[in-house]
Length: 384
Image 1 (tube, rainbow, N blue to C red):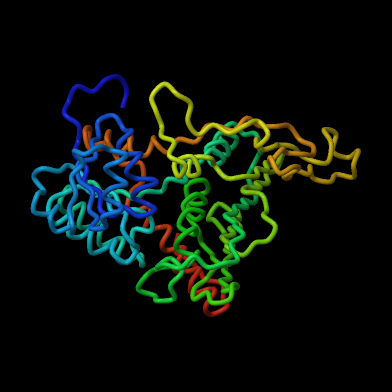
Image 2 (cartoon, rainbow, N blue to C red):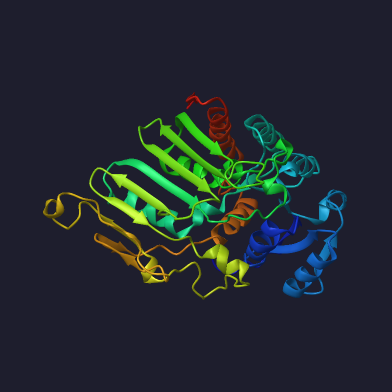
C-alpha cells in the first residue's frame, strides 16, 4: 500500500508461534502498514513472554483457535502458522467462521484438500492465500528480472537447490515419519522450489523424483531430487537436502545465449532469526557485492578462447566471495514484506492475493506426482 492509510488497521489473529509464527509471520505482519497483529494463539508461557517482549504487554493471547472463531467479528484475517497437519482443519474452521485466511505452505497434504479449501473460500467470498515467501527471495527476483529482460535468451534448464549440511537430526514433526504430519523435505522445501519453478515456467507435464533417507535415525526423506518437464519445454532440476557435505549453487539457469549462477541464500530469514526487522526508509534484503551472481557464456568473454568451457562461479572464500568469469549481476533486494502488503491491498480493495490457493494446489499436483515417482521408481505424467 502506498502513502499513509488513515483507515483503521485490519486486525490479524495468528495461530501458532513456533518457527513460522515467530520468525516470519508475526514480524512481517507487524511491519505492514494497514495490518495490526491483534491476537496470538499459543498456550506456551515462554512463547507468550517472547511475543510480549517484541510486541508489548498489550498483545492478546488465546489458548486455542476456537477462541478466535468466537471473536470472529473482532478480526479481519486469520494466519495459520501451526504444524502442517493442522492446516486444513484450521483453515476450514476459519473460513466457516467468516474469516479470510492466510496459510503457511504447504496449504494441505493433497491437491484434493487444497481445492476443497479453495472452493469453500470462493463459496463464502473470502480471501484464501498461501505464504510462499520464497517468491520474494533476492535470487528469485533477480532471475525474474533477467528473464524478463531477455538476458539469458530462451531458458532451457532451471536448477534450484536448497541444500544444507545437518548430519544431526533436529527432531520434531518436520522429521517425523508419520504420514499425517506431512513432514520431510519433499513437502517442506519442495513446496518452495516447485512454486518457484511453476511461477517462472508454467505448468508441468512430467515428473521424475528420488527421495532418500540418508541420516542415521531419520524417518522421512532428507535428500530429495525432482526433474520436471514444463509444458513449454523447460526442464527444472530441483534439489532439497539436509545431507549435502558440499553445497552447490543456489541457482544455475541455462539459456540459449547465457547462463546465470548464484550462490548463497537470501539474507532475510537469517536477519529475521537474528531479530532484525524491516523498517520503512531503511534497506532490507540487501546482500553484499561478494555474493552477487554472475552471467555469461563460455570460459571467457570470447568463449572459444578457453575451449568454450562455462564460467566457474563458486564460493571462493569463507566470506562467500565469488570467483571465476562472466559478469557480476547486482542482486535485487529480497522483499518478504511485499507478501503481506499484497494481502492488505487484497483485503481492502478486493484485488487478487499475491498467492492463490489454486496456485498452491497446482504445486501439490507436482509434489504428489513426485512422491509417487520416488515410491514406484517411475516417471509420472501430470495434466497441464
